[in-house]
Length: 421
Image (cartoon, rainbow, N blue to C red; front, top):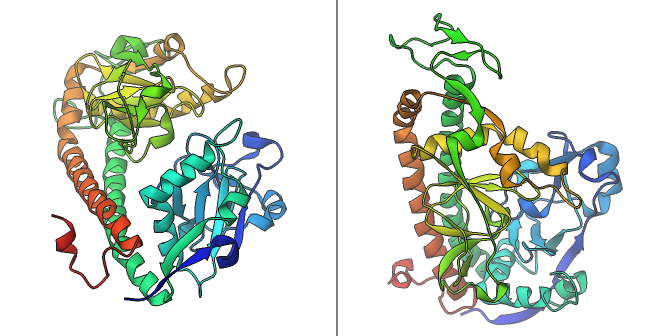
């Protein structure tokens, strides 16, 4: 076996540092552009999230040239509730910069394999160490540049073996990423169908033809012309609203004790949140397949509960009065622009309360059309659930292998099947 040795990041990296928020803050961001600005919400464990990815112009980017991202850079969240989350930057979002809540770690390629270092930082024991460091300050959770520079990494002194270890774990992450991509494509198809039926009013009429363009009867409403048999109303007329409440902090744990707990949108992923925290004293509960919505900045991010869970004060849960779970998810997703307009409400940061949320004006379709929609996308959503279960199994295998491989307990020549029993 190759010898393992200790590496200090300050000696093994060519870059360690965080960025800054451009002058003017969020008001100066763009929805698209040449330069991406990576924020903490984009950095999830193991994966980069495009949700809420901001863009800046050439002038803003030039002022952040010292934190320009390079291919294979490691990103580490260094402040707030998402502190210690780690991923690598995807090449397709370059060129990019980071704000002050995200640190760049760039290992020297002849010393440390970048993917090996990423997995080392994601090893649960090292993650616990980073969280301990982050909570040691007097105010908010934070990891400083000095702390990162002093990180000690134990790794093979042979870069080839580091690479081989990383490739085993990366192969699992590649399959996870493929499943996620398929899921995103399936969801995009369902969103397009939702728009066609419930926004453009081109659902199938009695003859199977697009309703509005085939002369379907339209009637006047407060929100404009709508199909006959539909009505205008408020969100609370169509959905049950359940606003979250946070349990006491001393009931939180990462040891699977009690009920799954989501404080806010920090664990949101594609469709379902990542399970990370639990509570032994749940206050407000969201049922399986209910739609979860962020009600504190940033307002309007959407996920679905994969299992019964406790929701904290940063979330609300919505369910259709007739239990149309999939329709609910796509309906709330279609209202994101309206919901995000509340990001600037409140005295400190954006938020939306139950009354304001419930009073958002909407068009309420007939139950029969909603039922047809759920039938039409049933196979799509079943495949999304199946692929998500497979993702969970792959994640479980990766999480089993990671600490063994990254510590040398399991040599890369040993069969993987021996590790799954």
